[in-house]
Amino acid sequence: MKIAHYDETNGKLLGWYDNNIHKNIPTPNIKVSDEAWKQAININANFIDKNGVLSKKDFRTLEQLKDSKLKELASSYSNSIQQNIDYLDTTFQADKASQDLIASNLSVGSVPDGFYWKDLDNNNVQMSYEDLQGLAAAIQARGLINFSKYQDLKSQANSAATVEELEEILWEE
Image (cartoon, rainbow, N blue to C red; front, side, top):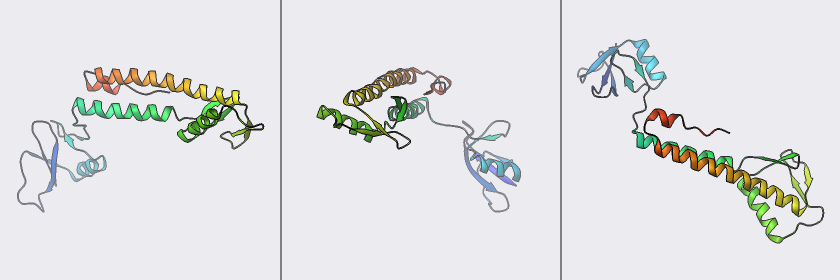
């Protein structure tokens, strides 16, 4: 028989004991069947409710959860501005390296005759300087839209008063 030692104030599991092995078992504690103990280990249970049900619970404070949500939103924003983009009836890579390469080509003020840019299928797509400007503008426009979205979600996260409100804030494409 396994025994779960827990904190009475919040139900947080503090340790597992076996009465066949341990002589001194701290209190409060509750006896748990071997099957329930195995299930608890499989789900990484860290909480026991007043009915003895074991589960996984997030013990972070609202402020800690907000910090985590803000990092998640920043990562989603960063990923969104580097996603592939459809332009000129094809799909181009728009990661940081590609954006830097576009910018360096635009800074010259022209592209050589027969300038090609590879699409995602590794096909050469002939592009004029104006085409390259259009691709850059499309990437920039998407970036501005996603930045606005990021700022809005960030504001919502900072204003959330409950964990439930915070959980409802999602980056959706």
